Image (cartoon, rainbow, N blue to C red; front, side):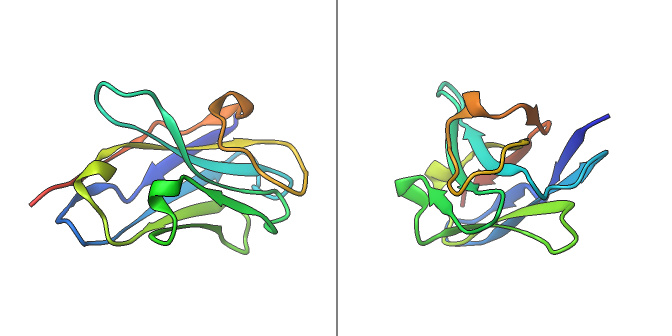
Length: 126
C-alpha cells in the first residue's frame, strides 16, 4: 500500500523555523514528482513547492521564495520542507504529495498529484 506520513509540524513564533518531513512507505521517491501543499482555514489548498523527479527543477509559491526549501534525501524515501523566517500567514495544514511521473520540470497544481499524506498543522503565532 502506498502511503505518505508527514511529521514536524507544530507551534512556532514568527521568524522561527520548522522542518517538515514526509516518509514514503510501500515505494521509493525516485521517478516521482514531489510537492508540498498547504490549506489555511477558509482558503483553498495551494501548492507551496515542488521538485522534479530528477531533482533538477524546483518551483516555489512566490510568497515563500527565499524562505522555504524543498528537498529529498539520498535514500529516496523521505522528502522535506525546510521553512525559515516563518510568518503568521504561513499558518496552515501542510500536505505532501507525489505523482509517478518523470519529467524535467514540476508542477504545483494539486490535480497533478495522486498520492497524499494526511497533513500536519503548522501554526505561527506569538
